[in-house]
Image (cartoon, rainbow, N blue to C red; front, side, top):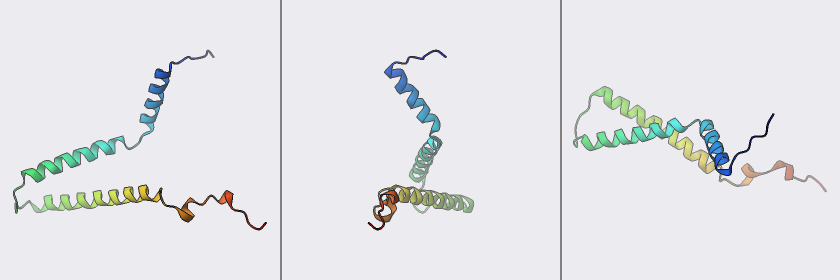
Length: 98
């Protein structure tokens, strides 16, 4: 097999494309943007005290509950990585006895 020679720029582009293809949550970011944009637009359009149909209120409540659950879990995962103590204990460093 012949050697393949890449420039540093080509190598960086290759690494970036491999990283992008492995990123399974790229759609989530787009979806969050869509949710936020449309929710804000509707919020601007609604008059104070305006009534929505029951099914609309139900869907909004379900969406809020779902988003809140995801954000809580996501934020916990971020904080958990910074925790110290037993969670960060490397058991290979333990010495038992002398």
